[in-house]
Image 1: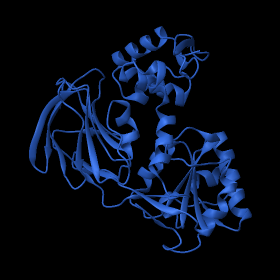
Image 2 (image 1 turned 90 degrees about the vertical axis):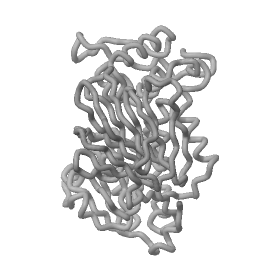
Image 3 (image 1 turned 135 degrees about the vertical axis):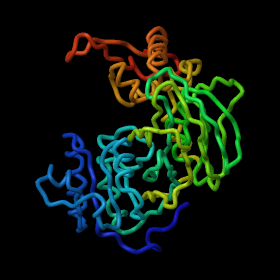
Image 4 (image 1 turned 60 degrees about the horizontal axis):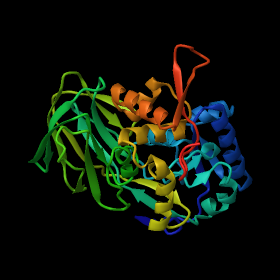
Length: 367
């Protein structure tokens, strides 16, 4: 759902800024600050970036601004949103160094061309539904993308019973379970075969990962439904992964998931249309086309992660994908054999291998 920024409050001159602390990201944050100051904006810096710039800052939750700009990657954005919790302040993600991030329409390099529109209020508010969950007696912060349940040790099944509004829907054993928002449907959920859901559809998707029941399919339910996971068990501890950023231990009590009371509000400089979203999805999923089409879903996921992140160790790939170690090993073996990925020795530790994409696949195959 979108609404005019002007109708919601006129000109925006107080701009909060949050940034990652990597050197390249700090450089981009400096450029954003300069562009804002040059247009007369009052910039409020979060403590960490303020320290890096040797300026005065405030705590993240104490930022009182018309818009909060978040400079960095999609992972940094998700962490920042988790830390912010429930806020109605519109968020403008600014991609550092033009990284391929799905929620970013603006990069630090092109921010100077949009800063006037931002300050004049020539943008719309794009509301994205979030989830909240009760886990082991604690309530999670609002989640933009998803909640995933996995055994702490890879290659270990979890068993559970799924309830929808107190009615038992299915029993299952699987590698994991992902509950996603429409925004999250194009994140981890999509990588393991979930449906793509366009915003602002009022639904939640429930996706078993590698279920022992081959007839089980992804489930789409209205976001008014309360989802409850009962009888959750495994040979090892079970963890809940929140937006891919936080891990919470899960005890024997039910996990209850609902739509959060507050949405995330993003700044959009033009009305999002299905065609624009389709263009982003094509860029995000282009590894699924052409020669990569016949790869197993796990291999496609590993390939996509390596395209985004560059060279990674096997341990890092497991952490990024949340796949079992044996599945990652098998996926890498396929990708190396098919010529998509190569392995090289780490200069830091000769005992470790680094895996990276040889070259982005084309219609004619890898080169």
